[in-house]
Image 1 (cartoon, one colour):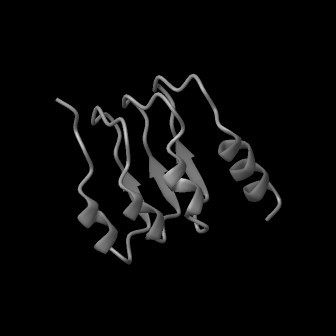
Image 2 (cartoon, helix red, strand yellow):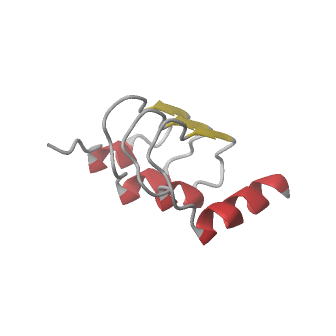
Length: 87
């Protein structure tokens, strides 16, 4: 059974750090992109693609997606890294 992060997470408008490590997640809710996160840990899950929902988080400074099944890094990841390095 796939595990999911509830979309109600988007209501936590002051959330800065989110640790979702080791939850067998494959996707994120689109509502996560509205949060003012500075750090997110997505390590040790079941992502097979980079979760593009986090690209819209302009406050994000640190993310961990290690130990996943990501084998395709999209154009969006490249854009995200360039955006972060140009700050």
